[in-house]
Image 1 (cartoon, rainbow, N blue to C red):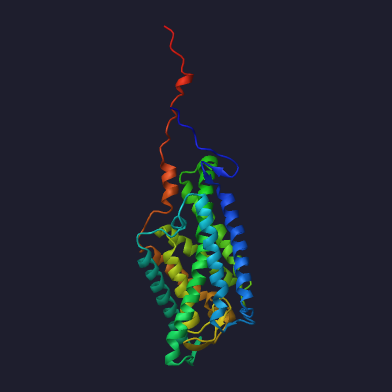
Image 2: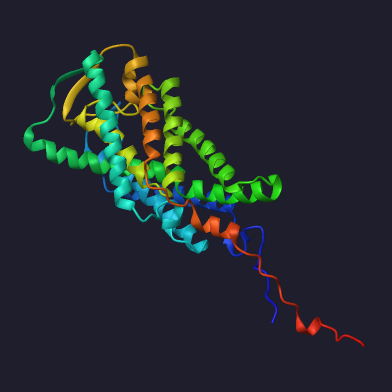
Amino acid sequence: MSIRPARSGPFFSEHVLRSGWGALLVWVLFFIIARFSMGIFLSTGAHNWAPTGPHLHRPIEYAPEFIALFALFAATYIVSILEHRTLATYGYQSKRKLPLFLLGIGTGLVLVSALIGYMALTGTLIFAGRGLSRLAIFKYACIHAVGFFAIACFEESALRGYLQYTLTRGMTFLYRRIFNVQYPLHWAFWTAAVLLSGVFVLMHRQNYGQSSLGLLAAGLFAMLAAWSLWRTGSLWWAIGFHFACDFSQAFLYGTPVSGYQIRDRLFITHFHGVPFWTGGTAGLQSSVLFLILIAIAAIAVLWLPQEEIYPDIQARRHAPQIPMSPDPDTIRPRVR
């Protein structure tokens, strides 16, 4: 019996959706599902969810983040069926999911708290008192924790989830077959990481009070997330770190995050000094001190437990080539 090669075509290669079509399909499905879900949400009467200024006042204003997260996972799940993979393949599989997530939270809280403490000691951040009563602290801490988790999960999944995986898969083939480099997966992963970090920067251009320094920090923050993905093989540390940075700045210490500031926060604070050091209305993420925070976090990633990145791509690269057996009908008897 002969072994037939897997079918290939313009959309599929060996029964797997080609990476370019996969990336396009995920985002087409995402926009369709998100628009449909948002239409249902607005039809319920909650039509005033959009903030009118750089402040978040009500928990309902986190609804678009949850809708976007739902649409993204729904679109990714549909494409995963076409690719015969699970959602865990796209950066969520790890033997240490919870420890990595908690380590990310701990790293973010410690570094942001250290930065806030330094600014308070130098007088560039002024604490004006507590913003919530004791009874309201737990309530709003839970509300904003859930909201900022949705934000972190969406932003990390949107750019470092399926897109990072599928671009790495497609570029690995190009680097191996066309450029013939020694480590095609390494080149492919970091090429995709740089491209998607640029997209992350573009996503933050419209933030209130954004500056060139803030855009640089956004790009480096994206590369930090990619570095943790490369090191640990999953997104869990990056999601935890992203969540902790946003939550601690916005709720615990009352500073703006990406130009937005929540009203119901633990402490009332305000900056005192030039935006180069404080970040101004955009928040600490536009401060030069935040670049130091990112550098320290990148060093901390070196101490994380290392796991293999994208094991299915690695296995495919090292898979032995099975020779095709000849068709018996085409074998001619040897004439003596």
